[in-house]
Length: 560
Image (tube, rainbow, N blue to C red; front, side, top):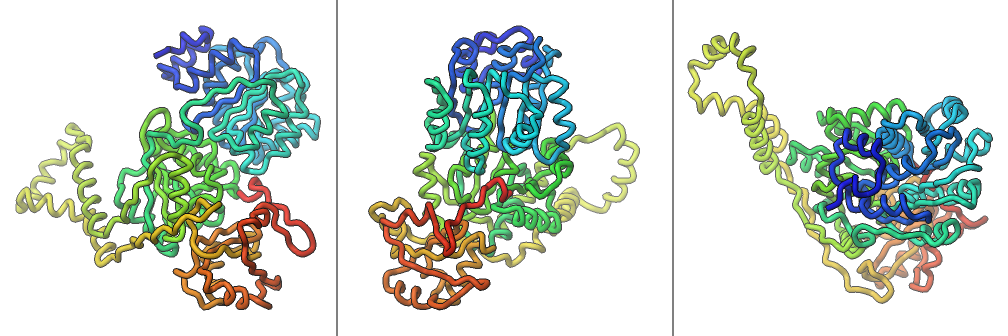
């Protein structure tokens, strides 16, 4: 196994990372750093989240740039302000022995004038989110004409968030003679397009198999009714008293709602999403990193850049629409070689998506049961006993009070004292969970495979021109379909909610009735259209049309 000194790093950098506690390089650092230091060529590096990618590009950058020149030589682009701030903090710590190196972070939600002043004062490294960087370019407040190195970090995530046009505009503003280093967890076709258009014969480095799950993460799923997911979440948390985790929701509104409910119910939780002011986001992240906050409820985008060690659990209240997001979510745990658990709560209609993930990630998801009320009580009792064993007894300060304490206990036996103390905590959970229902749902039998469809759907696929843009979620849309057709939940399978349209499956015998049921129907003044979708009509999913023009998918960056 190599050490950092074997990679060709300079002495000031080695001293800085030794102070930070770096001992041996991670695989991505081991493969990348020597290449970047010695080879004057572009790079594509694929590695899962949490594998040390920031140091993999940050350490070589510090060594390669001209610390005596004050112009901007390095541009690092990241998808979110949290990741932007994290990268900036990390690179500053790597460069602590080279005080002449100046680094500035530019991102939305903070004062642009202050960021402009920092750039004017002279910086070698700019770390930026795409949107704010476009603003600065438009104001001619940043000069990219002498850029020597461009780093695209979490490139797949930036494309998922709708930043493709911004990335194109930014790269066109940089010199042709520069080096571009692209770091990504997955390799979608758009990444190849960027490499083809803006990179020259890039060297490729890959750690692990592409799209394969981190082998240190245990993947679990629970089948539960959608309306009971919050109760199931509380049981899982109660069953895991030492949990230190992130709970992922789809939208900002759901994130805040879940956080508010957990706080109201006495849990140590808070939210992180795009509607919070920067000061609020910073406060939440400080609390989470210091472990004074136990549960962080977050959207996908807001959670980007959360670089926190020892996160024990990731809980997905819903699977993301884009399955690549699951890779990024689960990558928040099991960082730096540690282990973690990623849990998914699904209803029986979405079990097929678990099978999809298993194929995509080349891993196995373990079906787990929502704990019963008695199991939660038992686990809480054992946790209390463990805390008693591990508590630090301050003999000196407790000594003065012990005679009075022993006097109060003199009429109780050792067994009675133990019973009464454990009951103080135990009774609270026993009262709450007494008679608690079983929340587990039987897993629906997988449907036979259909040619051209790897999601194991049965029956006929139907198109409906209602979706998220109509302020609907799956439960609300399911209700609309049930109300119009008189079908039951079990008759409507694999409902997929998209932006302006959705898909669902029904048995062939119901098709004519469903189409007829929606004739003349409308939602909020807009005519509802339901059609049979044949396999050769997949284009509709990619380019939906509405009367009056082509619907353009709303950018993810505006959703969070």
